[in-house]
Length: 170
Ligand SMILES: [Mg+2]
Image 1 (cartoon, rainbow, N blue to C red):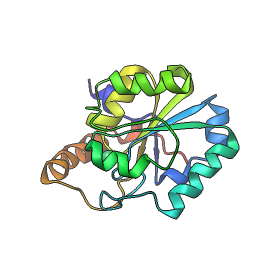
Image 2 (cartoon, rainbow, N blue to C red; image 1 turned 180 degrees about the vertical axis):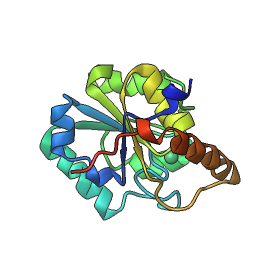
Image 3 (cartoon, protein in one colour; image 1 turned 90 degrees about the vertical axis):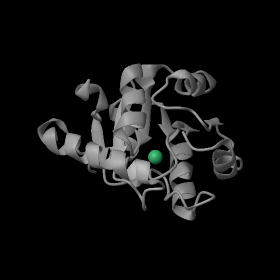
Image 4 (cartoon, helix red, strand yellow; image 1 turned 180 degrees about the horizontal axis):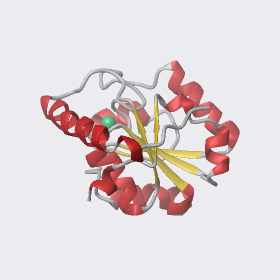
């Protein structure tokens, strides 16, 4: 069970994931979480640095999509201008919407990475499907006390399994 919570890779932030990371692993698509992954939960729309990173993905011919557990309203306002598939209220680690976006992007589980900041939702969801799971260091503050509470368990799990973690650096 613990194994399913652990990421294949850890990164300090999304921008560390360069073209080499994707090509060496034959990854053709990335599913991103939003809150504390791409931005702090207080950012209503994608800031310049996120748009720049998405432009790089376009250039590298890597498809991307967004699957968030946050409200439909939050996810709509963040994603509507991006022109990529997205789902809010996705209830990760449930597989349903992860599978849906992969279908829309026409990619297989082997070709897909999931980038997120939480073990119990993002990493578990990715690992249950056999995606490449990438854990980012959380951006910004936690939105709710429930998230901070979970975060304490997550830190303990990561600390106890330090030797099994692989940080990707350029
Ligand atoms: Mg998150």
